[in-house]
Length: 236
Image 1 (tube, rainbow, N blue to C red):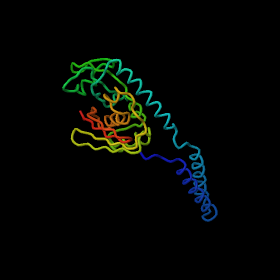
Image 2: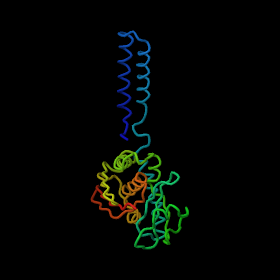
Image 3: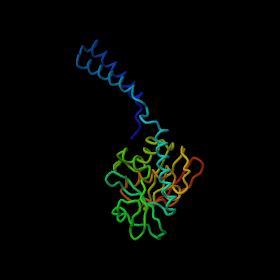
Image 4: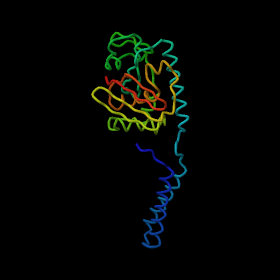
C-alpha cells in the first residue's frame, strides 16, 4: 500500500531504459533488448507526466468535512447522543447506526445488518438512525480486505489516501481496539458527531477497522490533545 511517487519511479525506469538501450545497441548488438530499453524510456516519460496526487488532499478533506456536516445536521435533528455502531460493508457500502434511545447494550450487529435501509428503523427493539460516515467511500475506493492488515489499512487510508494525519497505529487486545493518531490535520467542530461517531480521523479508522475485521465497531472513548488523538473502540 506504499504510496507510489510517480516522479521517482518514472525517472528511475527511464534512466534504466536508456542504459539498457545504449548497451544493447552499441555493445551487445541486440535489437530486441534495445527495443526493450526504448520501451522503458517511453514508459518512464509517460509516468513523469502523472501527478503525485491525482486528487489534491485538500479537496479530499473538503469533501469529508462536507459529509460530516451533513451527518451532524441529522444528529442534531434527532438529538442523538448514544455511540454509533459501524458495520462491515454490505453490498459495497459501509454504514453506521446511531441508537436514538439509551440502552445498556448496543443492538447486535446481526440485527443492524438486517435492519431496513431507512433513515430511522429498529434493531433489537431500539430505534436507530442510519448514517453514511465519510469513511464509507474511502473504504470502497481503497478496496480493503482482511488480507490488508488492520494497522496497514488504517495507516494507508488516514495518512496516504486522505492525508488526515501524519501517522497512525492500531492495537487489538481481545475485543478492544486502540488507534493512536499523530499530526492530525483536521479539527472536528461537529459536536454531536464527535460524541456519537468520534473525531473525523477516528470515525474513518472505525470504518476501516469494521471493513477489515468484518465486525461491528463502536467508539468507547477518545482523548484529543492538540494534534494527537487516541481512540478506543469496542469490537462487537
